[in-house]
View 1 (tube, rainbow, N blue to C red):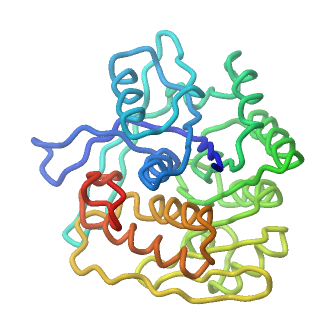
View 2 (view 1 turned 60 degrees about the vertical axis):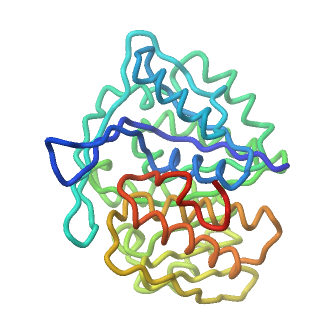
Length: 305
């Protein structure tokens, strides 16, 4: 069975329209994808750094209960994880507020334990990371990560990347563009959101976005366009796949992350890109009808509960 490692930052999450009755959970774009991959019966591990506090213990326990492997999580003594709050409007659109400057995940590649983790990552079939993952690392850390991806790919592993651009995490769009371009040259499957890549790269449409990514060496591209669906592009052919309409979404947090999980899981089953995108839209369509980044297990479509 193919194994997937998701690299990034997970934080404690507070969500809810009423500030006096907010719900405590956890989230992070690559962690959200890892949870949904596990629910879709993919063997997945999460790679990050947490503290040695009770909240970190709780998150580890929750991930294990979801079926996500935690052997590649560094536990930093005397540290605590970051957290964020989500406010949603009447249409389900959200606004994030972060407290994460001292989060141990930012130092992941600097911990002595990471050398052992890096060796372990060489046995995985897929490595998944995002633009948010890259935004929390220093220039030196990113260079070490690039070297790791080169080694993984030289041994037959593949890289999945979602640009997932959050401007406040970068000093400038130009800096994000330069960094992400380096990682895209090591990417086998890219799942950008068109609105993000318009801001970073100036792409005018999904076809132009896909063409740029193919020119960078990415063999398979899925350009997400929220309610408009997505464009699946590979091997010289492109297919539009419509999204599943969901009136009055409750919370769009985690929709793209779940789409990525649904797509990769279906591709690992051997399904073609268009069918995989349909599966991914179905999952994301369910996610936006529930609060928070990770919906209840019983809401998973297709019997994956």
